[in-house]
Image (cartoon, rainbow, N blue to C red):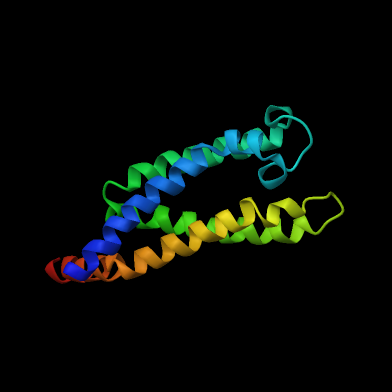
Length: 143
């Protein structure tokens, strides 16, 4: 049990850090547009980008909230993991298109993959998946 405490605490910290980065997507795109924005001009000039900002700010808020008790939010954490992998894969392919988007291979693509790898590894090493499976078995036996 003591071994699981450290990854659990690090998972909580990672949820807050990655949640904060998601909340800060708009300022990141303002400071480093070639790594975070897919359109010319200011971030607010693209309705699509502002929609993405809205989605990521929302996910960021929920990840920060999940940091309080990650075991109660595993489906959200796994959604963040797998949606980040899918989003990064799509953006990596699109960055090779003719629109001069190679900066994304150094910006949002690795950021999404880093978030996915770190969160997945911390959930698995914290024992949350095993603990929840054991709790479910106990509940079904008790019923």
